Amino acid sequence: MNILPKTQKKFHLQLPSQSNNLALIRELVSKVASQVGFDTDEASKIELAVDEACTNVIKHAYSNNANEMIDVLIKIDNRKLIIIVSDKGKGFNPDKVQVPDLNDSIKSGRTGGLGICLIKTLMDKVDFSMKPGLKNQVKMIKYLR
Image: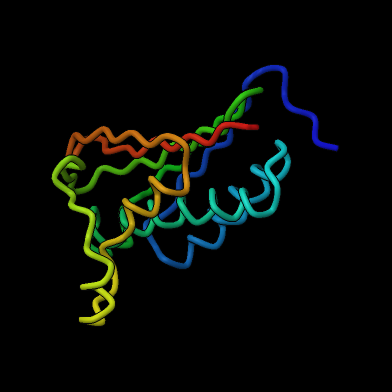
């Protein structure tokens, strides 16, 4: 039986922007999600959303520059799990990101371009804050049911 915390708890990771660090991030997110009461399926969805957000930072914000840092902050309270992925790389305008046509992607064999759509589908709420070079954030929330 999982007992929810009476006060908010926080976990913070700051790691180099390297693909090999994604496993560590996934493991922490999955374990925290499971400990606060998400079932295996929901914990996997949260893990996938965070993995996608971090992968986007590595590829797009930092252009695979392993010398930059990714911040992952996990906050837990008795109603929700909040995960904030932050970077200081190139930002983007989330309002201008278009949902790709899946049929077109399949026909052309194109991969990628579905990250933000996937994150929004897997999480209950997603907010973006962009200040390129200073601090970009994607805040993902999953409510406990």
